Length: 407
Image (cartoon, rainbow, N blue to C red):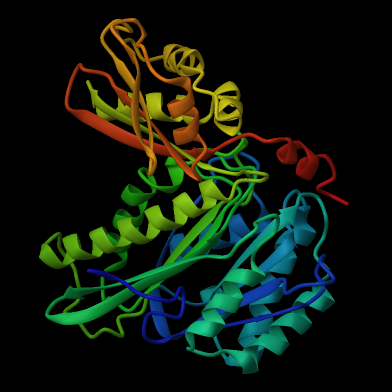
């Protein structure tokens, strides 16, 4: 398996386009489109928030009822959430627009939106954007890159990843792009992720692979503890690699699952590290826990602790906040047995053992915490299970960004 350049157009048979439609932003691209040259089996996972945006409801119906999808239309700036019947009608109108221009059945057109909740989409601008993108659809990597730029809201950088791997004796590719910076919390977040692959695989196994992988990737990140109305991950597989169709959990399925994990974990970490106002990716690894479920709970508890996140921003080895977060997680453990370490590319330092702080250097700890990627390692010493969660530090800029987000 190899990491390769590109995103949603890395796999064979996929094209992308983007444009500045003026949906909300006036100085940047804000629409993107992905097209599969042939019908692609589709899978998706969506927000656990009871309040679901219109695009989520539209996509859920398509993923559940249709074998294939061909196109995805995405807009940034307006979420089309809490918009009633009118918002749902706009999803259908978007699909109708693609149907008219490309001859694709509207029930094979997925839609996604991100941005401010409660505003209605300017449908004339959205339709005009689709009309501008259709003739610009291209399989070039640059088109995929521009699409990744177009779906950003408060993101500071585009987020792409792609890998090549072997299935059935042929080379296959899986690529993706995502956006997400704020309203990010486990069990999906204000995140949109779009994955494309040329692997031939059954819809049932595609859905299972995505569902199981989400639990260890996107559902293990948090920026601010808020779960969005719009979270969507869509995966399209068009079979253009011409491998024997994967219909059982064999070596080819294992290779596909491995590729999916690498792409999703890469994208998830990019989102966590680009949290609103963040200066550092904050990772927590829990090892030697009694169960995987408890390891996940403990890791999430640390990366969602506002006090710990603030300490990471201040490069302060305030290990008491970490112990506190572990303690209120709901997992029962013996605090006298665990060990805590800080680590980064600058090194590793033991902070806590046998129920108390060790004699460590505050200066060295601060130097380690000053790196752009910081890890808290928690050794529970009570089993063989492990889990990793990702977040970011908490800065002044997070408040500034969200204090005037709608303006």
